[in-house]
Image (cartoon, rainbow, N blue to C red; front, top):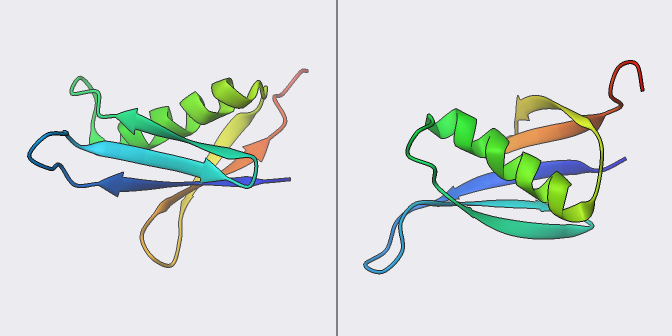
Length: 79
């Protein structure tokens, strides 16, 4: 079982706020969706990585020692 960590990246002169979701199987850079809160964007980044990898799991969220968001993959109920 893998966990996904998501870290927020501050904006630069040329790029806005981004979120990097990563796990042992890969990573994705997710641009901030201004229609959502920061915490919702962390989850959206993790969900985008799951979709990219073709996985079908629900997520349980926590916070790592360094304040990154951590998502644990759990089996979907009823499936």
